[in-house]
Amino acid sequence: MNPNGILELTVASSAFEDLETIPFEHTQFGANRSVPLAWEGAPEGVKSYAVVANDPDAPSPRLRLFNFTHWVVFDIPPDMASLEPGLPVKPLLEKGIKQGKNGYGKNGYAGPKPPFGEHRYIFTVYALDAMLGLDPAKTGKKALLKAMQGRILAQGKITGLYKKG
Image (cartoon, rainbow, N blue to C red; front, side, top):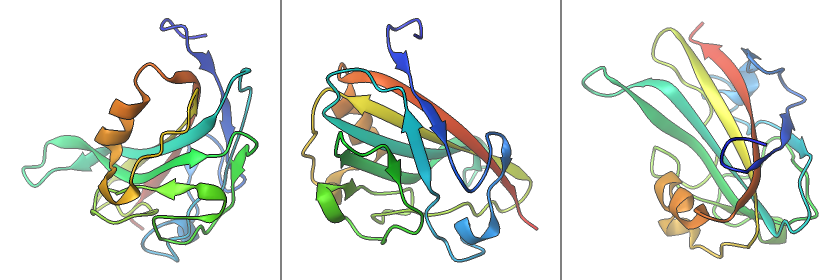
């Protein structure tokens, strides 16, 4: 349990280990297939899951660092504990899963594409006490995080690395 009373989920990917390189096929230099994720350790009362993927090492136009959002997924049913690789790049998926806006303003996964240097890509999974029911056309990371306030029962993360070849 973290200091905020939120339980820890264990998050893994069959494509890479924590703090290891994300395979080329999951980058924008490759096929841009979404990474597979799996999680465990959710407490009782979970009504949905959400995933946010960020690059905290992305340079802004002024070369200061900022968090670039690569993926926003929510309303993942509580009976699911994984996402398959290569999800379609569209707002609505099977089972009511929704993909919000990434940093490019598009719905769905946008894989790593660092302009230079090695970047970290942090995939955070949240276990929530409600389905959020947000409109994916209007939901980016900021709106999702706001809607999740006070609803997070557990969370966990895995970090992948990638540098331009």
